[in-house]
Image 1 (cartoon, helix red, strand yellow):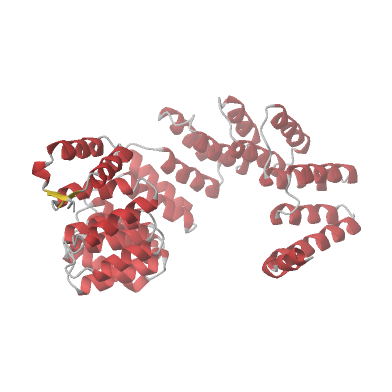
Image 2 (cartoon, rainbow, N blue to C red):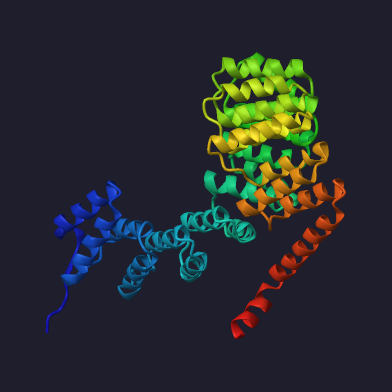
Length: 431
């Protein structure tokens, strides 16, 4: 009877070097191939250092590979080692199998801070916020020490779940545990408070010793969101005056939103000039915000000029200028723009359709509304709630009440079928 050979990694220099080299280059399939060849040769090894890159490789391969390695570890009694258990947990978390990871975690007798961080970070990163927050609280009671990445996600979970009390406790934990000096943690707390009370957020902002782009962006965006556009703009001016940080597109989008709320063209022009000076004018998202800003500040000519100057234009940009033309009662120009979209091969979406339907009240022509209706059907938006609501409104305002009523009834029937989908389909299958 032939028994499998047992080697340590020191006696398997070729296998070890192959696995290590393949892992260092991210050649995960090669790592697993070497592992299978060793298994096929009847080789057993007890050195855990060989298993770690193999388990890591499984995170990038079909799920069943990781399960087979896990089974092998259990068979050899190696799963009980903390470092090996952590690797298996990490594999399951990265594969999205949180329940499997939790089973391994629960069965581990000697958990360390790495174990807790893997589980907490994994749940929070995968959107299981309540479970992740519960694990964090449980872990703290058992004395685990969080790392920075996990702590940032825990704070984010607190304000996402509106768990204000837990968020306040986290602030205290951050100070006591010595994480306060880390900017990413400070920014997470800043984001949390900006969703609770801007006055508290501003106080925290003033206390920060090192503020980065995210810090300023959170504050400016927070004031815009809370309807205090003037304060947001003053904060932006302070940022520029102090020359503390280099701008990016995201912070300029928040500043442009503030300009829209303020509604003054002079300020809008100043911000546009600043965008050009900083080389951000060709960022399509910034350009979209600028077009929207000019249109809402009743300067549709500047919006149109900026739109024409853009070298690349996505559907969002087209919709922004179309909405601006309609809002400024430039209805013929809006229809002409829609024709240009078709000629340039830009496919309209539901926002485009809603904007086109807004032109119907101006033309008061049944044929105009019906032609847009036919486009809606052709593009497959006849079941889109937003589009259908706008279509019913357009027909009603054009005194085409019968058509509006028919579409309303059709939409209601479709909605009824959709909400009873589980009940209806078996009946159809039974016919």
